[in-house]
Image (tube, rainbow, N blue to C red):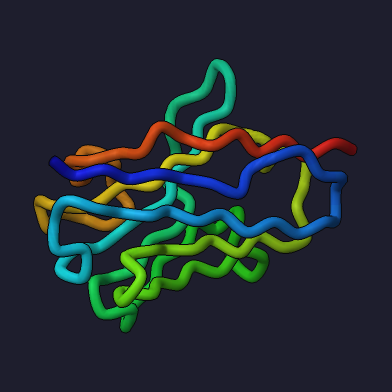
Length: 124
């Protein structure tokens, strides 16, 4: 059974940095694109960033481009999301997902496994 466990969330002030981690087990991690999505209260889950199996290609939402960086360490079965210059509008529960379908990296239904989420709160 695939398990994804996010960590690193918390409360920070606007302008601060935070690094999220997504540790995976149960399926050959290095074969799959991994993505980060977020969901704020009352809003739909939205794409944040994704990285292909080799790390050779990355994707970012326009709202985080230039501030967030996604990276992976296949030897550790872990994907990271470095978030800089955080804004109050970045406040959400952040989820990592594993794209088992091979579908579009920015599309949530393409992901077949999800973690439980980690709360990120940015105060103004």
